[in-house]
Length: 106
Image: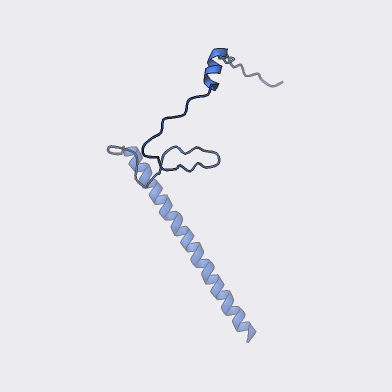
């Protein structure tokens, strides 16, 4: 028989609290400058406005972060190198196959 996981039951919210949570809220006051429209993906709401390539962090990065970033850069570089080798081999095989077929045709 499967082991029962004993979990403490959640306390129910009071009826009053649930009514307050589902009550209709007044609309927000009009702003003078409208915000830029946010594009939300299917499953995730837009968390930040328009994100540019700049970081949000302030101050000097930690040593661990620098080490992880250097490792990641090395991994990406090796990955691109592997992809370039595969593409070069594929192109060489296509050229060789074309030359062989051309030679057998004549």
